[in-house]
Image (cartoon, rainbow, N blue to C red; front, side, top):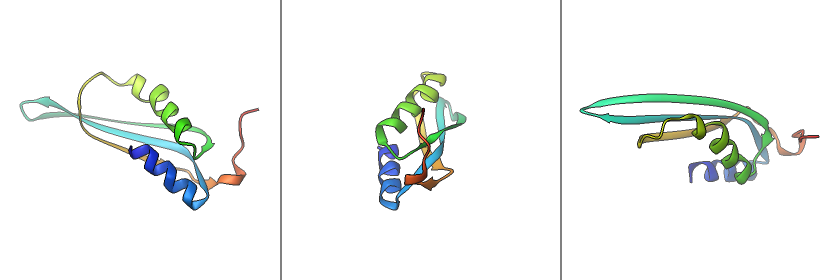
Length: 88
């Protein structure tokens, strides 16, 4: 849901992102927490499904299977949507 809203905002502004940051905080029990953050770069996009695929394949697949306490996602490195260079 967070990523879909971010992609929707990009499209509304006519922009595309080239970097995704994902942060997670896990509660380990007895007041203990663990944190992790990952950044990935990619060809500029504002497509929700493409961003979800990037998140799943390049971020979530690398993280341990723990129940998150808090998560966050941020898109950065913006370019105008019409200037994005696609794959050849």
